Image (cartoon, rainbow, N blue to C red; front, side, top):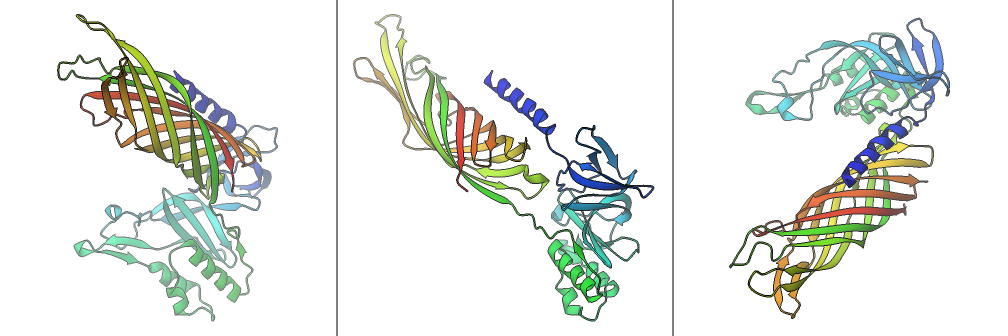
Length: 417
Protein backbone atom coordinates (compact mmCIF):
# COMPACT_ATOMS: atom_id res chain seq x y z
CA UNK A 1 0.00 0.00 0.00
CA UNK A 2 2.74 2.46 0.88
CA UNK A 3 4.32 1.96 -2.55
CA UNK A 4 1.07 2.86 -4.28
CA UNK A 5 0.71 5.98 -2.12
CA UNK A 6 4.27 7.07 -2.89
CA UNK A 7 3.78 6.49 -6.62
CA UNK A 8 0.58 8.56 -6.64
CA UNK A 9 2.35 11.35 -4.74
CA UNK A 10 5.20 11.49 -7.25
CA UNK A 11 2.86 11.59 -10.26
CA UNK A 12 0.62 14.21 -8.65
CA UNK A 13 3.47 16.48 -7.59
CA UNK A 14 5.08 16.15 -11.02
CA UNK A 15 1.94 17.34 -12.76
CA UNK A 16 1.31 20.18 -10.30
CA UNK A 17 4.86 21.48 -10.26
CA UNK A 18 5.28 21.26 -14.04
CA UNK A 19 2.34 23.60 -14.44
CA UNK A 20 4.02 26.13 -12.12
CA UNK A 21 7.35 26.48 -13.96
CA UNK A 22 7.72 30.17 -14.89
CA UNK A 23 8.16 31.51 -18.42
CA UNK A 24 10.99 33.91 -19.24
CA UNK A 25 11.17 36.99 -21.44
CA UNK A 26 12.05 36.26 -25.04
CA UNK A 27 10.98 36.74 -28.65
CA UNK A 28 10.38 34.96 -31.91
CA UNK A 29 10.46 36.01 -35.58
CA UNK A 30 7.78 34.51 -37.81
CA UNK A 31 7.86 33.71 -41.53
CA UNK A 32 6.79 37.26 -42.38
CA UNK A 33 9.78 38.67 -40.44
CA UNK A 34 7.55 40.00 -37.67
CA UNK A 35 9.30 40.07 -34.30
CA UNK A 36 6.99 39.13 -31.44
CA UNK A 37 7.99 39.82 -27.83
CA UNK A 38 6.68 37.07 -25.60
CA UNK A 39 7.37 34.73 -22.69
CA UNK A 40 9.06 31.43 -23.50
CA UNK A 41 9.26 28.31 -21.36
CA UNK A 42 13.00 27.98 -20.87
CA UNK A 43 13.88 24.30 -20.68
CA UNK A 44 17.61 25.01 -21.02
CA UNK A 45 17.67 22.42 -23.78
CA UNK A 46 20.49 19.89 -23.76
CA UNK A 47 19.32 18.73 -27.19
CA UNK A 48 18.36 21.35 -29.75
CA UNK A 49 14.60 21.87 -29.59
CA UNK A 50 12.25 21.11 -32.46
CA UNK A 51 9.57 23.36 -30.94
CA UNK A 52 8.98 25.68 -28.00
CA UNK A 53 6.10 26.88 -25.85
CA UNK A 54 5.32 30.58 -25.52
CA UNK A 55 2.82 32.99 -23.98
CA UNK A 56 2.00 36.54 -24.98
CA UNK A 57 1.40 37.38 -21.30
CA UNK A 58 1.52 35.69 -17.90
CA UNK A 59 -2.25 35.23 -17.96
CA UNK A 60 -2.57 33.89 -21.52
CA UNK A 61 -2.61 30.24 -22.52
CA UNK A 62 0.62 28.60 -23.66
CA UNK A 63 0.99 27.78 -27.36
CA UNK A 64 3.47 25.71 -29.36
CA UNK A 65 5.54 26.87 -32.35
CA UNK A 66 8.03 24.87 -34.44
CA UNK A 67 10.40 25.27 -37.40
CA UNK A 68 7.51 25.51 -39.88
CA UNK A 69 6.38 28.84 -38.44
CA UNK A 70 9.45 30.46 -36.83
CA UNK A 71 12.68 31.74 -38.37
CA UNK A 72 14.32 32.58 -35.07
CA UNK A 73 13.63 32.68 -31.34
CA UNK A 74 15.55 33.61 -28.24
CA UNK A 75 15.41 33.98 -24.47
CA UNK A 76 16.83 37.20 -23.07
CA UNK A 77 20.38 36.89 -21.71
CA UNK A 78 20.32 33.12 -22.19
CA UNK A 79 20.13 31.62 -25.68
CA UNK A 80 19.24 32.22 -29.30
CA UNK A 81 18.20 29.77 -32.05
CA UNK A 82 17.82 30.21 -35.81
CA UNK A 83 16.03 28.04 -38.33
CA UNK A 84 18.19 26.61 -41.07
CA UNK A 85 17.80 24.02 -43.80
CA UNK A 86 21.18 22.29 -43.80
CA UNK A 87 22.96 19.18 -44.95
CA UNK A 88 23.87 17.33 -41.77
CA UNK A 89 25.73 14.13 -41.04
CA UNK A 90 25.02 12.62 -37.64
CA UNK A 91 27.68 9.97 -37.16
CA UNK A 92 28.38 9.23 -33.50
CA UNK A 93 32.11 9.44 -32.67
CA UNK A 94 31.53 8.20 -29.12
CA UNK A 95 30.93 4.51 -29.87
CA UNK A 96 33.26 2.39 -32.00
CA UNK A 97 30.42 -0.02 -32.84
CA UNK A 98 28.48 2.83 -34.49
CA UNK A 99 31.30 3.91 -36.81
CA UNK A 100 31.16 3.30 -40.56
CA UNK A 101 34.06 2.28 -42.80
CA UNK A 102 33.90 5.46 -44.86
CA UNK A 103 35.58 8.78 -44.09
CA UNK A 104 33.07 10.56 -46.32
CA UNK A 105 30.10 12.33 -44.72
CA UNK A 106 26.65 10.84 -45.35
CA UNK A 107 24.47 13.92 -45.53
CA UNK A 108 20.73 14.32 -45.04
CA UNK A 109 18.89 17.57 -45.61
CA UNK A 110 16.96 18.68 -42.52
CA UNK A 111 15.30 21.81 -41.23
CA UNK A 112 16.59 22.50 -37.73
CA UNK A 113 16.82 25.04 -34.98
CA UNK A 114 20.56 25.73 -34.66
CA UNK A 115 21.88 27.34 -31.50
CA UNK A 116 24.04 30.42 -32.06
CA UNK A 117 27.33 30.40 -30.20
CA UNK A 118 29.14 33.33 -31.92
CA UNK A 119 27.57 36.05 -34.06
CA UNK A 120 29.67 38.39 -36.19
CA UNK A 121 31.15 38.43 -39.67
CA UNK A 122 31.65 34.69 -39.13
CA UNK A 123 28.93 32.88 -37.21
CA UNK A 124 29.29 29.65 -35.25
CA UNK A 125 26.35 27.35 -34.50
CA UNK A 126 25.85 24.08 -32.68
CA UNK A 127 23.41 21.19 -32.95
CA UNK A 128 23.13 18.47 -30.29
CA UNK A 129 20.98 15.35 -30.13
CA UNK A 130 21.44 12.14 -28.11
CA UNK A 131 24.93 13.13 -26.90
CA UNK A 132 26.06 13.83 -30.48
CA UNK A 133 27.21 17.40 -31.09
CA UNK A 134 27.88 18.93 -34.51
CA UNK A 135 29.07 22.45 -35.36
CA UNK A 136 28.07 24.70 -38.26
CA UNK A 137 29.26 28.03 -39.59
CA UNK A 138 28.71 30.70 -42.22
CA UNK A 139 30.31 34.00 -43.21
CA UNK A 140 28.15 37.09 -43.62
CA UNK A 141 24.94 35.89 -45.30
CA UNK A 142 26.32 32.76 -46.98
CA UNK A 143 24.65 29.36 -46.59
CA UNK A 144 25.22 27.58 -43.31
CA UNK A 145 27.54 24.58 -43.61
CA UNK A 146 28.59 21.84 -41.23
CA UNK A 147 32.15 21.69 -39.96
CA UNK A 148 33.17 18.14 -40.81
CA UNK A 149 34.63 15.85 -38.16
CA UNK A 150 34.15 12.10 -38.63
CA UNK A 151 35.61 9.06 -36.91
CA UNK A 152 35.57 5.87 -38.98
CA UNK A 153 36.82 2.29 -39.02
CA UNK A 154 39.70 1.92 -41.44
CA UNK A 155 41.09 -1.43 -42.56
CA UNK A 156 42.07 -3.68 -39.67
CA UNK A 157 39.47 -2.03 -37.39
CA UNK A 158 41.79 0.91 -36.80
CA UNK A 159 39.83 4.04 -35.87
CA UNK A 160 40.89 7.06 -37.88
CA UNK A 161 39.58 10.61 -38.11
CA UNK A 162 38.50 12.86 -40.95
CA UNK A 163 39.30 16.38 -39.68
CA UNK A 164 38.18 18.27 -42.75
CA UNK A 165 36.89 21.08 -40.50
CA UNK A 166 40.47 22.34 -40.16
CA UNK A 167 40.74 22.73 -43.92
CA UNK A 168 37.37 24.54 -43.93
CA UNK A 169 38.65 26.98 -41.30
CA UNK A 170 41.95 27.54 -43.09
CA UNK A 171 40.42 28.10 -46.53
CA UNK A 172 37.36 30.13 -45.56
CA UNK A 173 38.33 32.06 -42.44
CA UNK A 174 41.56 33.65 -43.56
CA UNK A 175 43.13 36.57 -41.78
CA UNK A 176 46.66 37.85 -41.38
CA UNK A 177 46.80 37.04 -37.68
CA UNK A 178 45.63 33.45 -38.20
CA UNK A 179 48.42 31.01 -39.00
CA UNK A 180 48.27 27.34 -39.90
CA UNK A 181 49.48 26.50 -36.40
CA UNK A 182 46.44 28.30 -34.99
CA UNK A 183 44.14 26.14 -37.10
CA UNK A 184 45.93 22.89 -36.30
CA UNK A 185 45.51 23.52 -32.58
CA UNK A 186 41.72 23.85 -32.86
CA UNK A 187 40.01 20.72 -31.58
CA UNK A 188 36.44 19.86 -32.51
CA UNK A 189 35.20 21.23 -29.20
CA UNK A 190 32.98 24.15 -28.30
CA UNK A 191 35.51 26.29 -26.46
CA UNK A 192 38.24 25.82 -29.08
CA UNK A 193 35.88 26.74 -31.91
CA UNK A 194 34.44 29.72 -30.00
CA UNK A 195 37.93 31.11 -29.38
CA UNK A 196 38.87 30.64 -33.04
CA UNK A 197 35.75 32.44 -34.33
CA UNK A 198 36.29 35.30 -31.87
CA UNK A 199 39.89 35.58 -33.13
CA UNK A 200 38.70 35.67 -36.75
CA UNK A 201 36.03 38.32 -36.10
CA UNK A 202 38.45 40.45 -34.10
CA UNK A 203 41.02 40.23 -36.89
CA UNK A 204 38.37 41.43 -39.35
CA UNK A 205 37.31 44.27 -37.03
CA UNK A 206 33.88 42.72 -36.65
CA UNK A 207 32.15 42.85 -33.29
CA UNK A 208 31.53 39.29 -32.11
CA UNK A 209 28.64 38.52 -29.79
CA UNK A 210 29.46 35.54 -27.60
CA UNK A 211 26.27 33.82 -26.44
CA UNK A 212 28.32 31.49 -24.26
CA UNK A 213 29.87 34.23 -22.09
CA UNK A 214 28.07 32.86 -19.08
CA UNK A 215 29.69 29.47 -18.80
CA UNK A 216 27.25 27.09 -17.17
CA UNK A 217 28.82 24.93 -14.54
CA UNK A 218 27.45 22.19 -12.38
CA UNK A 219 26.60 23.00 -8.78
CA UNK A 220 27.81 20.87 -5.89
CA UNK A 221 25.76 20.52 -2.69
CA UNK A 222 26.78 18.82 0.54
CA UNK A 223 23.87 18.04 2.86
CA UNK A 224 23.62 16.54 6.36
CA UNK A 225 20.75 14.01 6.35
CA UNK A 226 19.50 12.61 9.68
CA UNK A 227 16.49 10.31 9.35
CA UNK A 228 13.74 8.35 11.04
CA UNK A 229 13.32 4.85 9.62
CA UNK A 230 10.24 2.68 10.11
CA UNK A 231 11.49 -0.86 9.43
CA UNK A 232 10.19 -4.40 9.72
CA UNK A 233 11.69 -7.83 9.11
CA UNK A 234 10.19 -11.22 8.36
CA UNK A 235 12.37 -14.35 8.53
CA UNK A 236 11.18 -17.55 6.87
CA UNK A 237 12.79 -20.93 7.35
CA UNK A 238 12.38 -22.49 3.90
CA UNK A 239 13.43 -26.07 4.70
CA UNK A 240 13.61 -28.41 7.64
CA UNK A 241 16.98 -29.67 8.81
CA UNK A 242 18.24 -32.14 11.40
CA UNK A 243 14.61 -33.09 12.06
CA UNK A 244 13.57 -29.57 13.05
CA UNK A 245 10.31 -28.39 11.47
CA UNK A 246 10.57 -25.62 8.86
CA UNK A 247 8.97 -23.09 11.20
CA UNK A 248 11.08 -23.11 14.34
CA UNK A 249 13.02 -19.98 13.30
CA UNK A 250 10.14 -18.22 11.61
CA UNK A 251 9.71 -14.77 13.08
CA UNK A 252 7.91 -11.59 12.09
CA UNK A 253 9.54 -8.60 13.75
CA UNK A 254 7.04 -5.79 14.16
CA UNK A 255 7.69 -2.38 12.66
CA UNK A 256 9.96 -0.19 14.73
CA UNK A 257 11.23 3.37 14.48
CA UNK A 258 15.01 3.67 14.44
CA UNK A 259 17.50 6.38 13.57
CA UNK A 260 20.04 6.78 10.82
CA UNK A 261 22.39 9.44 9.52
CA UNK A 262 23.74 10.22 6.08
CA UNK A 263 25.82 12.80 4.24
CA UNK A 264 24.62 13.52 0.72
CA UNK A 265 26.89 14.75 -2.07
CA UNK A 266 24.85 16.11 -4.98
CA UNK A 267 26.06 17.36 -8.35
CA UNK A 268 23.53 19.49 -10.24
CA UNK A 269 23.97 18.95 -13.99
CA UNK A 270 24.60 22.19 -15.94
CA UNK A 271 21.66 21.93 -18.34
CA UNK A 272 17.86 21.76 -18.40
CA UNK A 273 17.59 24.65 -15.89
CA UNK A 274 19.41 22.78 -13.11
CA UNK A 275 16.56 20.31 -12.79
CA UNK A 276 18.69 17.13 -12.80
CA UNK A 277 21.19 15.99 -10.20
CA UNK A 278 23.41 13.01 -9.49
CA UNK A 279 23.81 12.01 -5.87
CA UNK A 280 25.66 9.69 -3.56
CA UNK A 281 24.65 9.43 0.09
CA UNK A 282 26.82 7.39 2.51
CA UNK A 283 24.51 6.41 5.37
CA UNK A 284 24.80 4.59 8.70
CA UNK A 285 21.75 2.77 10.08
CA UNK A 286 21.11 0.66 13.19
CA UNK A 287 18.02 -1.55 13.46
CA UNK A 288 17.48 -3.39 16.75
CA UNK A 289 14.33 -5.27 17.61
CA UNK A 290 13.05 -8.35 19.39
CA UNK A 291 10.05 -10.62 19.21
CA UNK A 292 8.88 -13.42 21.52
CA UNK A 293 6.92 -16.22 19.92
CA UNK A 294 5.75 -19.74 20.77
CA UNK A 295 6.89 -22.96 19.12
CA UNK A 296 4.11 -25.55 19.29
CA UNK A 297 5.27 -29.17 19.68
CA UNK A 298 2.73 -31.99 19.27
CA UNK A 299 4.09 -34.40 21.88
CA UNK A 300 6.02 -32.15 24.26
CA UNK A 301 5.48 -28.85 26.04
CA UNK A 302 5.46 -25.76 23.90
CA UNK A 303 8.45 -23.44 24.26
CA UNK A 304 8.78 -19.69 24.04
CA UNK A 305 11.63 -18.20 22.04
CA UNK A 306 12.80 -14.58 21.95
CA UNK A 307 14.35 -13.55 18.67
CA UNK A 308 16.60 -10.48 18.68
CA UNK A 309 18.08 -8.69 15.71
CA UNK A 310 21.05 -6.36 15.80
CA UNK A 311 21.47 -5.07 12.25
CA UNK A 312 24.10 -2.40 11.66
CA UNK A 313 24.81 -1.32 8.09
CA UNK A 314 26.83 1.19 6.14
CA UNK A 315 24.81 1.97 3.01
CA UNK A 316 25.87 3.62 -0.22
CA UNK A 317 22.88 4.87 -2.24
CA UNK A 318 23.74 6.19 -5.71
CA UNK A 319 21.07 7.73 -7.89
CA UNK A 320 19.47 10.52 -9.82
CA UNK A 321 17.23 13.39 -8.72
CA UNK A 322 14.80 15.57 -10.64
CA UNK A 323 13.60 18.97 -9.39
CA UNK A 324 10.28 20.66 -10.02
CA UNK A 325 10.52 24.39 -9.33
CA UNK A 326 7.64 26.07 -7.50
CA UNK A 327 9.33 29.47 -7.30
CA UNK A 328 12.71 31.10 -6.82
CA UNK A 329 13.30 29.52 -3.40
CA UNK A 330 11.19 26.37 -3.24
CA UNK A 331 11.12 23.15 -5.19
CA UNK A 332 9.84 19.60 -5.09
CA UNK A 333 12.12 16.71 -6.02
CA UNK A 334 11.93 13.02 -6.81
CA UNK A 335 14.73 10.46 -6.42
CA UNK A 336 15.53 7.02 -7.76
CA UNK A 337 18.47 5.21 -6.14
CA UNK A 338 20.36 1.93 -6.14
CA UNK A 339 21.80 1.04 -2.74
CA UNK A 340 24.66 -1.23 -1.74
CA UNK A 341 24.54 -2.08 1.98
CA UNK A 342 27.58 -3.40 3.87
CA UNK A 343 26.71 -5.28 7.05
CA UNK A 344 28.72 -4.58 10.22
CA UNK A 345 28.81 -7.36 12.88
CA UNK A 346 25.12 -8.15 12.59
CA UNK A 347 23.10 -11.26 13.40
CA UNK A 348 19.77 -12.66 14.54
CA UNK A 349 19.76 -14.68 17.79
CA UNK A 350 17.06 -17.05 19.07
CA UNK A 351 17.05 -17.65 22.87
CA UNK A 352 14.64 -20.01 24.64
CA UNK A 353 12.90 -19.02 27.86
CA UNK A 354 15.31 -21.24 29.84
CA UNK A 355 18.28 -19.30 28.45
CA UNK A 356 19.45 -21.94 25.99
CA UNK A 357 20.03 -21.11 22.36
CA UNK A 358 17.44 -22.08 19.78
CA UNK A 359 19.55 -20.88 16.87
CA UNK A 360 21.44 -18.01 15.27
CA UNK A 361 21.50 -16.51 11.77
CA UNK A 362 24.27 -14.39 10.34
CA UNK A 363 23.20 -11.49 8.17
CA UNK A 364 24.83 -11.50 4.77
CA UNK A 365 27.75 -9.09 4.48
CA UNK A 366 26.59 -7.28 1.31
CA UNK A 367 23.07 -6.82 -0.04
CA UNK A 368 21.33 -4.55 -2.53
CA UNK A 369 18.01 -2.86 -3.13
CA UNK A 370 16.31 0.06 -4.88
CA UNK A 371 14.51 3.02 -3.39
CA UNK A 372 12.43 5.97 -4.57
CA UNK A 373 11.60 9.16 -2.76
CA UNK A 374 9.81 12.48 -3.03
CA UNK A 375 10.65 15.61 -1.08
CA UNK A 376 10.64 19.37 -0.69
CA UNK A 377 13.55 21.80 -0.51
CA UNK A 378 13.41 25.45 0.58
CA UNK A 379 15.97 28.21 0.01
CA UNK A 380 18.45 25.57 -1.16
CA UNK A 381 19.10 24.93 2.52
CA UNK A 382 16.36 22.92 4.27
CA UNK A 383 14.74 19.77 2.95
CA UNK A 384 12.50 16.88 3.92
CA UNK A 385 12.01 13.65 2.00
CA UNK A 386 9.77 10.59 2.19
CA UNK A 387 11.66 7.58 0.83
CA UNK A 388 10.43 4.05 0.23
CA UNK A 389 13.06 1.29 0.26
CA UNK A 390 12.00 -1.74 -1.74
CA UNK A 391 12.21 -5.00 0.18
CA UNK A 392 15.50 -6.87 0.31
CA UNK A 393 16.69 -10.25 1.55
CA UNK A 394 19.36 -9.64 4.20
CA UNK A 395 19.90 -13.42 4.54
CA UNK A 396 20.79 -13.81 0.88
CA UNK A 397 23.08 -16.77 0.14
CA UNK A 398 21.52 -18.65 3.09
CA UNK A 399 20.16 -21.90 1.61
CA UNK A 400 17.74 -22.58 4.47
CA UNK A 401 16.29 -19.14 5.21
CA UNK A 402 14.99 -16.10 3.41
CA UNK A 403 13.93 -12.71 4.72
CA UNK A 404 11.99 -9.62 3.76
CA UNK A 405 13.35 -6.36 5.14
CA UNK A 406 11.13 -3.33 4.48
CA UNK A 407 11.79 0.27 5.38
CA UNK A 408 10.19 3.69 4.98
CA UNK A 409 12.21 6.79 5.86
CA UNK A 410 11.55 10.41 6.69
CA UNK A 411 14.79 12.22 5.91
CA UNK A 412 15.63 15.72 7.07
CA UNK A 413 18.28 17.76 5.29
CA UNK A 414 20.47 20.76 6.02
CA UNK A 415 22.73 21.86 3.16
CA UNK A 416 26.00 23.18 4.53
CA UNK A 417 27.32 24.23 1.09
